[in-house]
Image 1 (cartoon, one colour):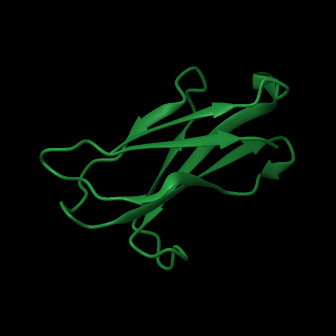
Image 2 (tube, rainbow, N blue to C red):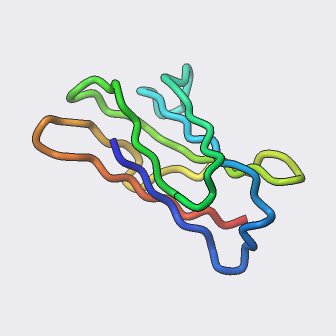
Length: 96
């Protein structure tokens, strides 16, 4: 599953240290199925591998700066299912 996100222009990129991408089969993320910490701030995208075909996954992204973790930003669409015929793309907008 491929994810990408954008930052609002007013947010200086030097204020950010990393992103946490979290996914789950449950809408309330209990329990999370996995997570990735993205510390390459030049690339606001990642690919989640090893997912089950046909299973719906919810995804959210947290941004981290000198004040700590921000509020999670949920994906659009809220969930997606990987399949062999369709690559699921999910987008976010991080706006502290």
